[in-house]
Image 1 (cartoon, rainbow, N blue to C red):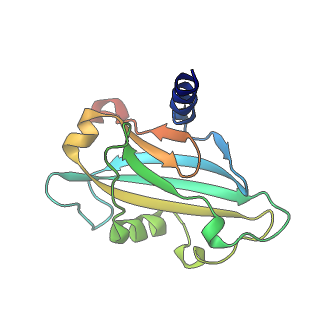
Image 2: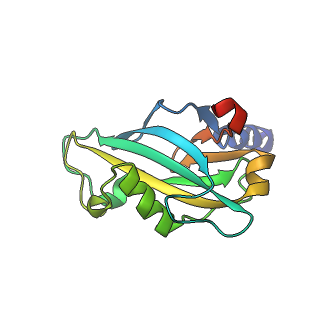
Length: 159
């Protein structure tokens, strides 16, 4: 009986809750909003490796505490497959350019965040085109059960 209850509890506790871009995710020290997720063939003059594309994520978060929060306590995101078998790596060169284009100040990322302040952030991941085409990619908000599904808009639909 105990094993059955434990299995049910564990299966419920690990399920992902999908949210939409623009939804607020409340954490212990912050509120986070994923502003946009976009699949890109290049970021300015930076191209991914042959057969890959970029998945760019822009998000922001606010310190909801009455005291300063150290940067190590601030929220982070990860791009994974929905089953979690793959975790994609950040392309730092593309991320730096994307941050400039999206008006994100990376110079403040390792500074503490004062009470009530908001900070913009952005990351660009390099992903095989086949993985994007297969679907099932998600932006996970770390240390939560929340994620935003990566939606691919066909070129014809985007016009």
